[in-house]
Length: 348
Image (cartoon, rainbow, N blue to C red; front, side, top):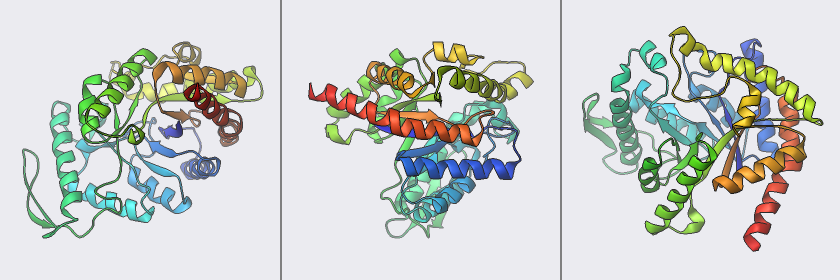
């Protein structure tokens, strides 16, 4: 079992300079306590995402840390020139000493795509073509003549010189947000780590299928990619303090989450309840003492079959100190308990 952090970097109300510094300090804390990976969302023209350029943030993380893995979950590929992105990926992979993780996706918000001049109806085709170009560029940079020629609907290249290859060969590890179990075969073929926000039973369907198809493909069980889900989380010395902090912080986060949808008079396909208590009831958030959180989390892990949990320690109005306390309590009182419980179950 591995643990990571997922972060929208949603607007907290702080001045941006202070906001970014607090996030970087938290990433340093994640590394210090043994968090495996830090993954960030990409959003535009919305308070849900105050890091609209993931590569800029990740270049700072590469310099502030030494061990923790990090990357986007996901790069919204429909918004990128793929050759430029391939170059950025190589830079980040080398700047971090080979710790960069490559999350790819289409982008969930039609409004954000539209603001950048991308027709949402074309987003899937653009995403797939951009992905193909990026992966070909990373591969071709490793062999002579180190150039790229490509003819597609959206991009055409003729013998473009490739001067940089990634540090991790053939490319940084791939990550994908999976909503449909029918995406599992592609993920298996590409050895892709996956994260799902589906209900626990839906996550279990995905993890069971991934394990089965991974073994059927002839891959060793010990090399299974990470399969996880995300949880907003607030941990405090008392149940009441954790719940009070979480309710207020989530209200701000939810307002940011809904900002563009409310502005455009519609609703998102990715559903989140409007209150913290409803989110907890749906099994998608945890708050309370370390003892409460670890029991609930252990049950959810066993029910869903995941081998990876992405936490959300910083969101909404949570102060840096409150997020840091959650991180430290999670590291000292939750992570070891989960590992010991799973080890005991496997040994039985």
